[in-house]
Image (cartoon, rainbow, N blue to C red; front, side, top):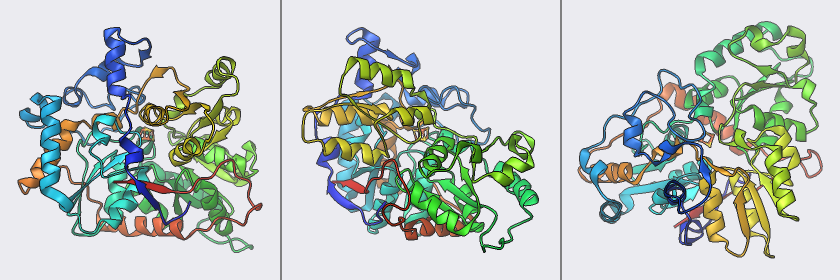
Length: 460
Ligand code: SF4
């Protein structure tokens, strides 16, 4: 990963004709298009979903248990629930024009097109947090993504800037799988096994905690307090190299798949990667396994990327000879092994942009990004490996109605749904992020890596 993003015009992100997931779902439901979705409730208004029992909502994470303390979204004013698409469009554009540079709207790659069309910046979570940091003129940063992303933007933005999550129910099931109390308990047990945070004869600590960007600010703060570091899906191997210079082992959370895929590509054997199940003593391991470990993997996963299978890849290869299969490293290891390439959302986007000949791509990542890329690159055939339309449940909780509410509230002088990280958490969390920014890739040839990508931010 590079830390200096190369801005490109946002036209690449959203000006092309789109085949939005919302419209696809409606067409499937009406019979105008063939196909299937993972839930008919995806057609329901998000405020109807907000009013039900706590849960991640329809989509890939709908079967995941949600922590009791997860934020809930109260009712938004009736006028936003009643407004037509055309009225919301008019009001959002008018509010944005009146606010000008006072507000910046960020849209994650996995966000629905109906919201992305209003975004000033489009990118992955870290690119967007970096974009927010650069917009010091903006009083308000409206993050059309999920909760941990808004927290990261708050960590990196100025003290006078307010970060807004338009729907508080837009959490992330993977981030929720690493709860701070469970992580503290895990650390306590590991310290008993390893004899505390005492360097060995080689000067390295027994274990360094590494957290994926997709984790709460509490977890980033924990990592910062214990000499650890944050990683993204673009720089995970660089970060693991950094950690192994300082520690004999790594405790990696929350995504077991990114941890396993990255460590395996660095030559670490599966026997040296025990899984930590927070519901069992010693995570379900014996002491010897923890002593022999190189990477202790947390029992977390992304329910979007868990849906991809090797059978889907076999089918794509059988039906599309010569197909180029690219998957995200949050996919399970057999899927990453069976693909031609694995890389971050930005890697996938650039791989498609860089293809000079018409190519067939089968992509293993969230459907909103895949359909947008397909619409933007009609010279290629691009399809999602998963034939079932199943977006990220929590990203899908953001709807233009919430964006209109957030923008018009700002015009009225009110900041709604502000996400603030407390100072005691923010300081060590920033330290863990700064360590990531300072971590340098190993010299070429020193660490085999399956895929790498440069970072860019799509700006307009
Ligand atoms: S795609 Fe997965 S990791 Fe990303 S926000 Fe959705 S549930 Fe979380």
